[in-house]
Length: 175
Image (cartoon, rainbow, N blue to C red):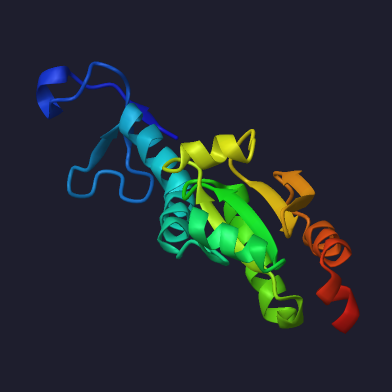
C-alpha cells in the first residue's frame, strides 16, 4: 500500500502517514488515515460475528417445564411423580443447551410422565440453596421424595437421557 505524507492542516488529519484509497487513488480527493484503515479492517472482521451474536440473543430461550413453586413440587412428590429440578439462569448458555435437550426428551418420551420445574438461579436463591445447587445448570431428579440423580453442567444429550431413563420406572416400562 502506498503512503503519502501530508501536512496536518491540509486535510485535518494526524501528522502520521496517510494511505491513499486502494481503489480510487486521487479520485475525489479521498484519503484515509492509517488508523482509520485499521479500524475499518477490524470492523469488517468483527461485524459478521456481532451480527450472529445479536441474532442468537434474540432467539427465544429454550426452556422445558414450568416455573418452580414449593406447592407444585410437594404435590408432585406426594403423587410419587418423577420431577426434574432444573436450576437455570436466562443468561447461561449451558442452561440453554440443557433446555433444548430436556424439551426434546419430553416431546419424544411422554410416557415417562416427567415434570420439569425450573428454579431461577438469580431470583430464587433460597431454593438454589435448598437444593444445594453449586451453580446454574444444575439438574436434580426426584422420584417421590428421594433424589435419584444430580448433575452440574451436563450437556451431553445421551448422558441426560440415559440417567432419566435409568431413574424413572415409567420410561423403562414403555420405551
